Length: 458
Image (tube, rainbow, N blue to C red; front, side, top):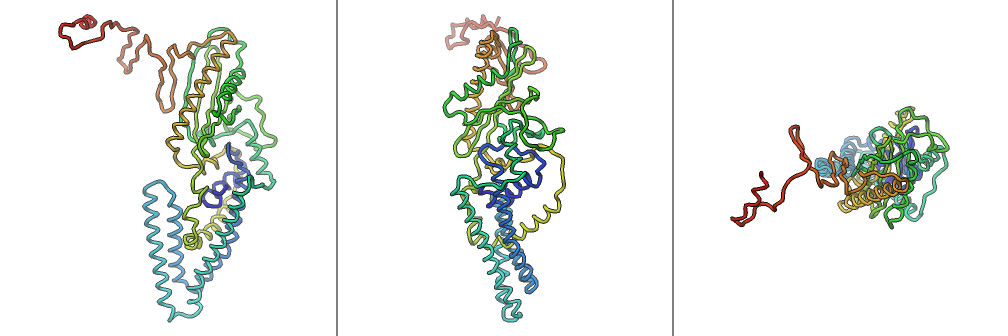
């Protein structure tokens, strides 16, 4: 929750997604309380607006009494504020721009100070007073705002949970979190779980009468197998993923899982990694006639950004004294524009996840390897649970046995082939695959008298 105080863009994104667009269903949040984050974001905005008003009044007074000097001062503060905003960017062009703005802002502020000193003897006393007292008062306002934010951060870190104010939006967010149904937009069915790292799909024929086959038995078997592995999963539950096309308005109590198509039913397995890194595996089992479909999607969510847990130089006293004069009035202007642009919209799925917005842009290498390990472990447990369930019901599926030939569609367009014994593989339009090969000798040797390998050439 500290991020809503330390990053203005993140705070605005949280309020826009959860409050200003309350008609949208909220994304799943695993290790954060979305309602509490929204309440803290609204508190942070009120604090910023409270100190933006006196800052804006100081700007108005300064421009009235010392116009040219304050124009230079405003340009320097705006350049430094832009440099701080771009400092955390990963793109090289953004970092170069941040460095250029830092140099430009420092030069403009130095020129403004030199001009104020040079004109102090010839200018009128209101202009001189505004030129020197205005920046000092602005620094005082910036310091007061920084102290208020620091005090709130201490409250957040000392309390296990910051209480939220009861309200309709908070109740709807909590209802979305408790409901087994997830509403999503077409392009982001797993929003809130991170980026898709791996996906596997398997189709095989089931031999035997399938009338008594029940997917619920398989899912329960998978859940028991996952929970039996120590430290593998922190949460195992069923989810129903539904597209937002034609969805009704958000409502209380939560959605019922009954009456949804089999294609919407998934088993969700959440595994916690180092720090706040999360790996979530979605598993779907479907039986269409004699064909059994198994689909597995693995998502990895990077840990929370370091600057949200350890405030960096951007919130040090000298930097805030020079950037807050531009940042706080900008907060006031952005709030006014957002308030005027609020229009009712039809209900739909979430556009962003507050947990994903707070995450690091890249997954650490060890975390990526851990996500791969979890994905493979769950896949083996899924196949084992499927084989056990089918065996208990007198059924069989040779495609689930690693001794048989099997293929899997892999995320990214690849194909994994489990066993090629007794078979061959060919690509191309004119390729011709032969079932078996006749090769009896080990091949050419260094012995000039050994020509047995030539017999294999026919």
